[in-house]
Structure formats: C-alpha cells, structure tokens
Length: 325
Image 1 (cartoon, rainbow, N blue to C red):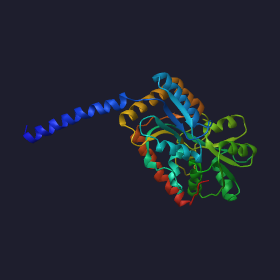
Image 2: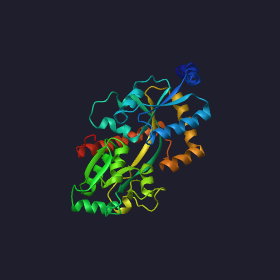
Image 3: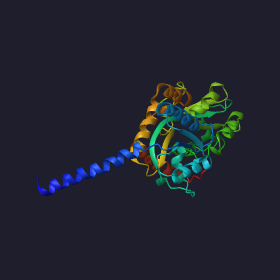
Image 4: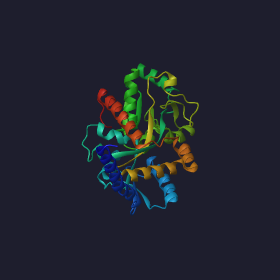
C-alpha cells in the first residue's frame, strides 16, 4: 500500500470514528420532551383520525410522550407553515393530506417554502369516488359525460376547492371533451349538504367519506378514480373500465418534518410509524374506515412521488388556467 493510500485509509478511519458518536448521540438523546404531531386541519375528516390512531399505537409501542395538535387554516397552509418554521430537532412532525403538494402551485403567496419541509413517508392512499344525486338519470360516469356533452355547463359538480379533486375534474373535462359547472367548497360539511340535497348533480370526494351516504341510498356512486375497483364498492367500475380517458388518481396521507431533521431521527421515526401502521389492528382500521392501501414509502420514494405529482398537476393547472377554489 502506498503512503498516500495509507494516509487516505487512516484519515477515513479517523473521520468515521469521530463521526460515529455524533450520529449515535443524535438518536440516543432523542426524544427530549414532547413530540408533536401537527395536523393542519380541524378534528374530523380523515387526516386527524389517521394521525390519532398512529399516535395511540406509537405511544403504546414506545412510551414516548406524543401529542396531536390541530393547527387549521388556509386549507392546511397554516399548520404547514408552523411545521416548516419549527426547530429541526425531531419534536415536530406534520401529518398531511394530498393537497399539501398543491399549495405552491396556485401562484399565491405562502408563509413558507416547500424546501423547508422534508418528505418522510407516504402512509397510504385511497381512490376517490364520483357520485350523483340519486334522482339523476345517469348511472355511470360515462353516462354523465354523455349528458354533459349534450348540454355543456348544465350539470354541476362539487368538490373541495384548491384540492386534487378540483384539478382532476378539469383534467377529465379536457381529456374527454365535456364541460361541467364546477362548484368549489371550503369543507366537507357544506359539500355533502348540497350533494345530499340535490343542489349539485355530482360530487367528488374520498370513497371513505362518501360510502356511508351511498350505502344509505342518499348518493349514487358512478365511478372510482383508482386503477382497480375498490373493496368498498366492488360493483362500481373504474373510470378506465368505463372507457373514460383518465389516469389513476388517489387521495393520500403522508408525513413531513422540518428540513434539517437529523437522518438518524428520521430513520427511527419512520421505523416507528411503519411499525404502528403495520400492526394488524391499525391496518384493519385503515382499510375498513378509509379504504386505504398502506404504502409506507421511504423518504426518497415519497420525495420522488411528490415531485412527479407536482410537475403533472402544475401542468394541468396551467393548461386549464385554474384558480384555487
């Protein structure tokens, strides 16, 4: 071995020896105090109960002091900003819905930058459903499209404004050559109030929230947005199975942390979240209550997913000149 080679090996060994305690201590000294799971929405919906189910199981598994804090406002912007500005010490984690990746795409000023939050994991995903008021004459979404082509702009459709559903509706209209009267809503309560009263003809939401109304006969499910039929509604075809030009589209839930959170802490939190979600009782709750396909992606996989989706939906927003509803 040459002198230069020997020096390089020795230097690497010293660096590894000096660096190892820092890596170990970053995890050994954590957690200190209370861990906060921030939910940028009010109680209810889906993100809040999903977070609380994970929090309860993780508390049982680890004995950590974990609290769930709801920081609602701005369709998730307020809570995301709080998390983005928090110290990257492993005590703050942001549990989000898929609209998190849309905030920066609308061209509106934000109190934080996407780069201030680092993706940790996609917990899981669920297809959305398109439903109609029962008295409407169409029984599939393909039939609704045919009716919309006959009378452009007459058929109304509601979804949460500034949401993935809003963009997906615009995508479907452009790809399939029909026009609906789009109505944005600020919350699930008003959306369902109008859908159940027949104020709107169609509505798009997560299947988990929609199915109780479908089972009660108060809404008629016309199609699902995933690549396969849902376990909650096996008799309802996907949009693709109906001949509709579409891509699979999903609601999803994920976790972020302030950028700069040490990797050993991220790795430990990722492992504990995965352990909690993979517990049979938790997985069953997520399947039964939210029609969730558990994913538990790595930080790198989650980052790649969000980057790809942001690029795709940004183009749809631009091509359709969409504004946040």
